Image 1 (cartoon, one colour):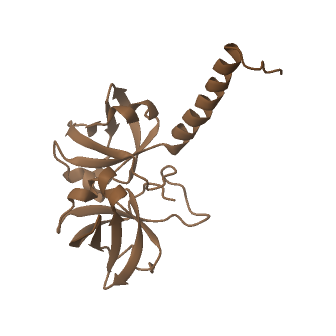
Image 2 (cartoon, helix red, strand yellow):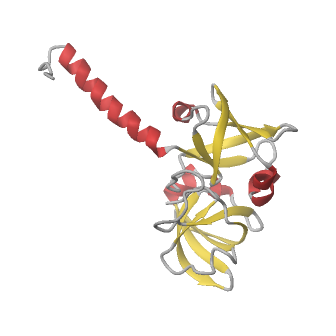
Length: 209
């Protein structure tokens, strides 16, 4: 699990295309200081498993499913990425509960002089995003300031702009999005309840309280 508090900005130093996958090497002196084979590190919001650590760099394999759902399909040598180690048991929950399971990509639309930044998102994700709720953008835990149709806005403080890759984003850039997992569980549970109620109303066995 992760909390969306980026620990450092890393740099992609190698990209190797494999069959239906890719192998990335990323420079991150801080996150590799105590990392080993099998550990989890979020790379721009994508939970990846470390397969090798050497000289302040770590190597990860990115499977086809992840490439299809995230911006890592377009990552290149020299790109900067947000890095966060998995949260230890008993650690501070500084942002919100994140799995590092990207739901899809959004598009950076722009930022005004007050730091209010707007993104476009896939229509199927908009139902999980609410004003003052949480969303992860490139692995950064953010609070939704406003939402309209398939766009949402967040207010970025100077520290976030400096300490993450969001400060260097330009219009049209792809970003990884992870919506609040709690919303997805609630939806699934509610769907089952509604389906049972409809079944009972239309001739099924009536529930008794």
